[in-house]
Image (cartoon, rainbow, N blue to C red; front, side):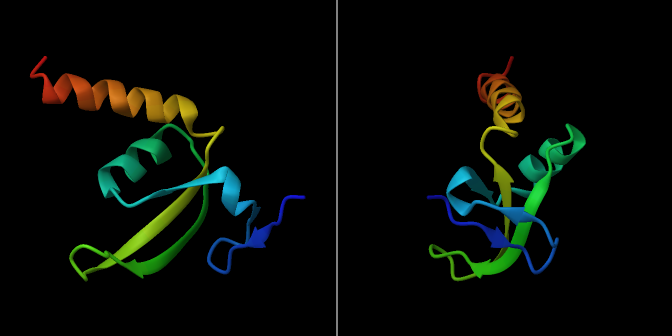
Length: 81
């Protein structure tokens, strides 16, 4: 049985196991421009650097098209296309 959480920042109910966590602000803005709903966000600490970060949660299924577009653009940039 799925367990749900309610965001204290957005007030939205979501299933954490159905979400992906995003840290890259450019990627988050890209997703938002495409209409992907932010389910939750919270402060955390980058385990590699010890720096504070904001973690954003989006639904995996709802963000799949945005992810594929993001990766396509990312690959083009990396390959200097």
